[in-house]
Length: 418
Length: 168
Image 1 (cartoon, rainbow over the protein chains, first blue to last red):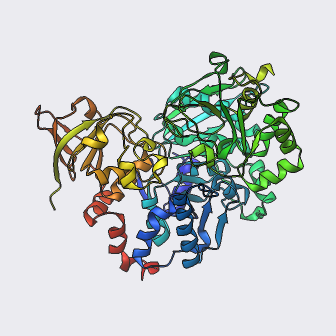
Image 2 (image 1 turned 120 degrees about the horizontal axis):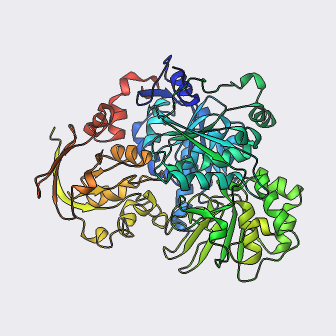
Image 3 (image 1 turned 120 degrees about the vertical axis):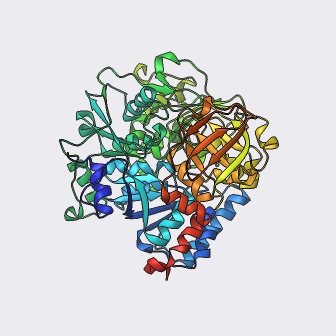
């Protein structure tokens, strides 16, 4: 019996020739990501250990949540991050340049076959590049920073086979929302979601990052795509040398606990209705729902292709004046590209709000909180009650195309009709 | 070490997310988060829960965000969590914080709010002292019991000091 890509990565990092689902292994970590909001919760404990960081070069501290601070207590979180970076001489400190889940992949900091852990549940995003990548608690990060390793229970793998050509204005986000509606928010608890099939082969690395970003919304330990030539090009563009990229894939006789098939040929744009990402329905079922805010961006859908899709729809339109349309790129690098390719001009002239690259509105930290009774449709990953401000607000999740179409009409709108 | 815990039960349903245990607006401060912890599901919980009480929940308890949500529950004195299943990050956080969490299919049907529960954390054997019903939960793996016995993650890492170069 062969191994899945996830099993191969965990076997190598734990010094085993073979691992099987359920086995407990202690694996070496290649990258540890800490963000400003949860770092301060464990820095005091780590200091108590009176030990250096196991390998400062493998640690990334990213200020993206309170970026920049909008309350005094957020300013205090930041000060603890600055102190930690200084005291422990962390070279990879990314301060207000974008969301970690974009910074790490776009910088070529994580490679196929490596293991990344981060103090954020959406760390699973980097699986789009063929890494084993998962969110861990701040409590666990103390262990990682001291020892450079962590225990894992080898997850079972669900194979998600995606076939067919995506119809016009239907995007990777619609696929993952559809999958969530099929398996539910605990459909993959502690399992791996391995995305494969011709649709995944055809899609961009950015779209694969979108798929893997939301693996956690099904409870998955990690999401992963097989690295290919597109992955290699993406990483080489980021300055990685070809010889440093290990190409690995699941064996033909690897064991899967479940196989799910999705044919996207007739897939409709999907919208997750309050208060769960798994409450996705075809957009046609909720068309016309009034909105106060649209959020386009975030680590789920804040990449260049996402904004090009949105700009195509918004170009030449005005945002209604009772609507706020927030544009929040996932990184400064993306921001700069959007300035060069004309998207930012389209958004600005349409009356959108141009925000910096941050977790901001998505996590309810700053810039775009909702009042009771308000409704927001966003391209982010979670619509839990109270996430973006008032618990009496409603949050809908959709693709950048659906978000853009809804922004110019003020109500949930099918992007295929624009 | 005494591994048996007894307490009054609070019940919760399926898919309770960690953001509702420790809300974002509380700056992840356990004392502030405790004031609204789980209030979307049971308004009485934050004010009426007593130290030593036990949570019995459905599937996927604590799903989603990686925030150390159990710190709010620990602040309130919750002694143990028994659930059908839990979010993986929450599960590990909760042990590391020093609150035992046991997964046990069928548990949510075995308890009503206000029942008395008894759980042996080391064996996973659970009794409903009110009804007399018993059930065997999945036994926690030794790694987790070790950390719990050490007094949490930090104490456990300290206890391993001699085995690692970085800690010397």
